[in-house]
Length: 124
Image (cartoon, rainbow, N blue to C red; front, side, top):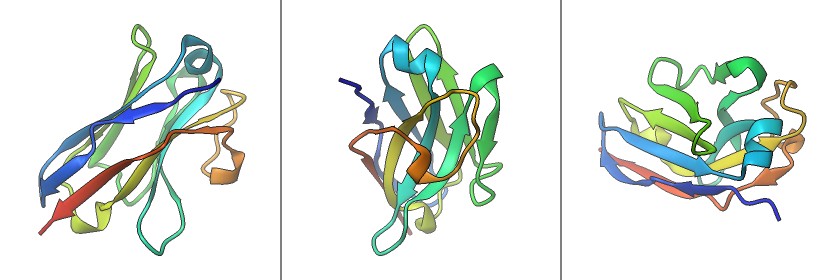
């Protein structure tokens, strides 16, 4: 059974920082593209950042320059460092895995596995 386990969400003030983690198995980490999505109440799930083969990363325009996605191969973990947080970043953040690892996609429907999500709340 594929597991994607997110952690690191919480309540933070405007301008603050959080680091989200997504831990998975080695099989998933090495074969699947990994991405973060978020969903705010009443809105569709949207792509935030992803990483694929060769270490290629993509960040949504709305978070570019503020969020940074990285991965730790030794821990089979993907991280999302979020700086300069804004109230509009408030959402449930989901980790997702997509097969194959070399296909870059931002569409939620293309992802095969999902974590349960972690809440991020930015207060003004």
